[in-house]
Image (cartoon, rainbow, N blue to C red; front, side, top):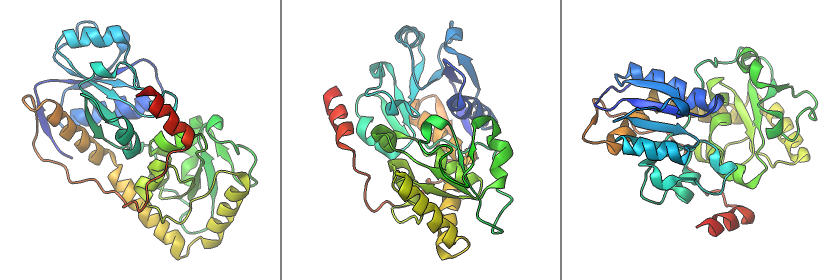
Length: 314
């Protein structure tokens, strides 16, 4: 892990407690402290007289908090995460000095403007462990929220695991599934489903959303269309190929994602970004290696309604 010397502490600012604040704030706070940077996480209501710091706002910042923070000499960063799946613009973006995007497509579409943009993948949660099933048998499950999976409870033999049981159940499965259907989710969801499967040493049956294609490549063997018939065919294709050449090739892609999304690699991305944001007060002792990214042969095309929405807001 890289180390840094920093004049400014890094303060993560949150308005709520969700998985996004665990990954984007609390885990990064700890990792930055281990790299030698003073860091903490606070609620926006606790900003008070915080000054001369780098403030990373998780998903949003209210205008009065941003104006007050700028007046006290802070550098402001927006961590977008999946905000663009639900919003057609980045509110108050003119008040930020930097913006963190979680995959390439949102950075391409929204990375213009005066704020310094960067792409930093969300790390996989270190509480995940490699699955215990290995190559004994094919075991598939969906990990996530019912609202994000239109086939919840409708696929025979595919259990749906809610968030409170993720870490307990993940070791029991060597294949995960992710289905993105909404146009803006296809374009702007981060890589979390892929990196979670990678951390569990599992393959992933997934739609060709932009983030998945970005890190897995366009020729990953287990893509599917989102409709039920296609998903069932993809499941049977994965089951039939289990343990074979395609299965092993998929796991090789997953190993690359596991490495590129590991916490030690991701904190290096943060340090490099902060050094660009504040070159006079933030110095990285050992620059991190370039991130591992699978080549993408063809970009994911934007659905017409998403393109229309972006054109309307510009």
